[in-house]
Length: 146
Picture (cartoon, rainbow, N blue to C red):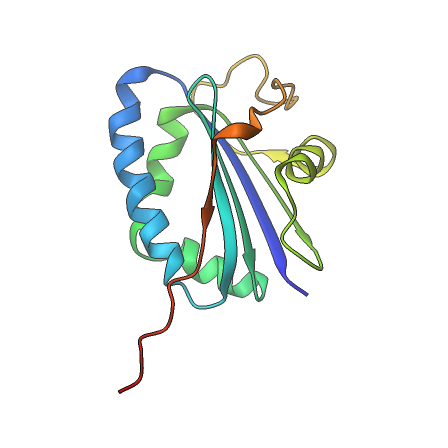
């Protein structure tokens, strides 16, 4: 049964957006080749808020990805760049949609540490996400055999 991970990050100031975007491109490239990654999606929400939805073979696969490469380089910066950050994980039969991800985040999610939290950070009382700006995130196909 796949292990699903959802993150929600809100960038606190426009000046952090270029660096965040660069790291987001690098981590998206990394995840596509990560062992155990089954698929997912990225959502560009309003107010400089970004969601990720990923499915993994097992929690260990996700943790290995998080602790290496571009993702590991980005993680320490997020607590400074973001004023809202949260995550939720669960086992699911299939990759859920954004409505399910939002519901799980509100019901079961937890706020992660940020240095400059917004008033909504700890309560996860954000606006419903704008679901129209989603893009799929597919695993990189294996190399063709000769």
